Structure formats: structure tokens, C-alpha cells
Amino acid sequence: MSNQLTAALTTSCRRLLAAGTAALLLSACANTEIHTGAGATKIEARQVVALVYAPAPDAEIDKLLFSGGDLTRAIKRLRDRHPQLKPWLDQGVIGNTASGYVALHDASRRDQVRALLRNENRDRTFLYREVSEATGHPDEDLETWLPYVSFSFGEEWIKQGQSGWWRMDERRKWLQN
Image 1 (cartoon, rainbow, N blue to C red):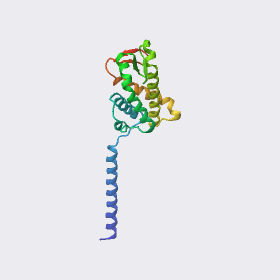
Image 2: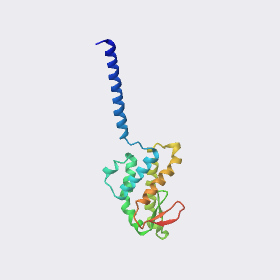
Image 3: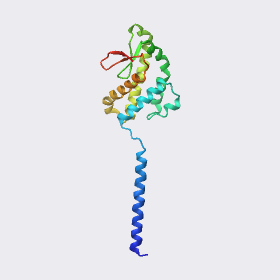
Image 4: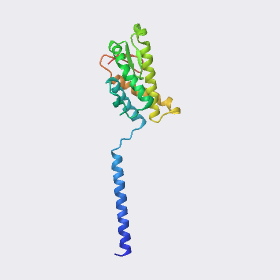
């Protein structure tokens, strides 16, 4: 075989190998989900609320897009507290808000639920801050991104809530699911 033919075959083989490698890499990328901050926030909100309302085992929390450390501990506190919140939600004493928190619906029962609401809203605030940071919006971005996160979660707390539970809309008007 001539040197020219050997060089041509070598070049052709390298091109085929490069094309095959590129095709393999592209096919791998096609099966990879890429989440933007907004999309990941919506997914995380849907999954976290389902785990809290379910109540799911710890192993399910570890499967979230964003978990670990303080974030996982906050989700566990929310999940573990839900059985205490549920009777108050069922009775209409408290309700979920569009902004992602729980609020007092029946003012005559304020003293009975004050500490429970404070603890729940503290953990929800922490959760929203941690999700904001996990989606790439720490520090200077946090104040502009945090409302998006809290309203994304608020939508899920309400949507996944039981029929008959009270909810407060964006105009601070109480409605029933």
C-alpha cells in the first residue's frame, strides 16, 4: 500500500471515530435533563410539598433535586410537623397563602396556634432561602429570586392541599379549596 493511501485511510478512520464519539456524546446529552433555576424551583416545590403532605420516608427526601444538610433537616421538620398542622387546616383555623406560608384564618383561635405557625413559617422561610441558593441565586440575587420561590411553593401548598382547606390569594382574600 502506498503512503498516500495509508494516510487517507488513517484520516478517514480518525474522522469516523471523531464523528462516532460526537454522536455518542450528543445522544447522552439528549437523555440528560437540564434544569434552569425556574424549572428546578417548580419541580422542587412540587416534590417537597408532596413529601411533606404524604409523609414520605427520609430516603425519599434524599432523592430531591436539592437536598442535604440544613435543607434536608428543614424538610424533615416540615414533614414531621404536618400532623400537628393538619387538624388546624381541616378545621379552617389556618390556611396556606399564595406567598407560601401558613396564616391564621380564625382569629379566635390565635393563642392555640401562634407557636405552631411561627415554627412552620420559620422553616418555610429557611426552605425558600436554601432552594434559592441551590438554584444559583445567592446573595445579591436572593432578594429578587426569593418571591418567585415562595410563590412557587405557595402554589403547590395550595394545589396539593385537601378540599375544604382555606387559602389566601395574592389579594389577601380567603377562599376555600
